[in-house]
Amino acid sequence: MGAEQAIVFSNPTQTALDSANRLSLWLYQVVEDEFVKNQPMIRGSNPDPADARGRYRDDFPPMALNLMYLLTPFAQSGESDHLLLGKSMLALYDNASTLMVDQAASVAEELRITLHRHTLEELTRIWDALKEPYRLSVCYQVKVTRLDSSRQPANARVVELSGDYGPVPESEPV
Image (cartoon, rainbow, N blue to C red; front, side, top):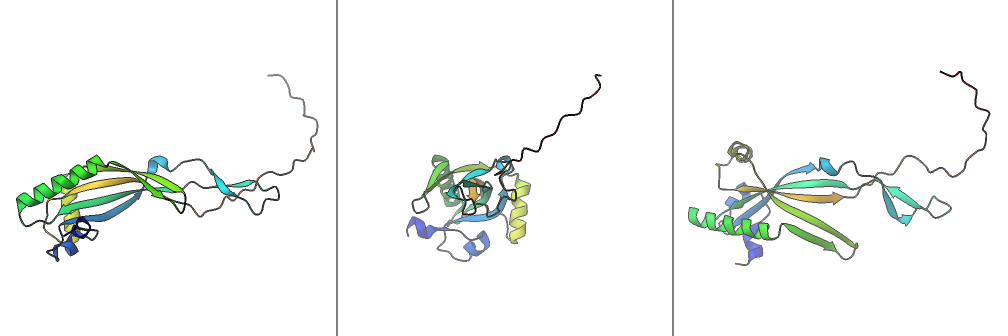
């Protein structure tokens, strides 16, 4: 069985139903990264079609997401579970910073993979939500996944100034 066949991206409840599955990597939570939320506007890559001068439009920054994964081994014995989990954790540790490149869109994004420490109580809550008994598992966080905003700026640029200025009224010295 190849490595691609041994890793599934479904929840552990479904993974346990198939004895051929060996490792479940389940996306259980998606949260917005609050630390990069207030980024400035980004100069667009294409000229604004509404601008007669051909200036570039400013775009809103992309939404940054943190993805939370539950990594659960499904081996034939407890010892094999430990070994599989250890090797999986080592692979994620060795590739903690991964560059994802999309040649067609000319985009490169760095993903940072970190072990996310949960208490036993927090892990137990995840398993309770699945209505499954607790299994050996760890959580990982993948940062930063960016989704481009489709929102357009509401304010138009200033294109003309008027020179209607009058005298400034004199004020009393304080």
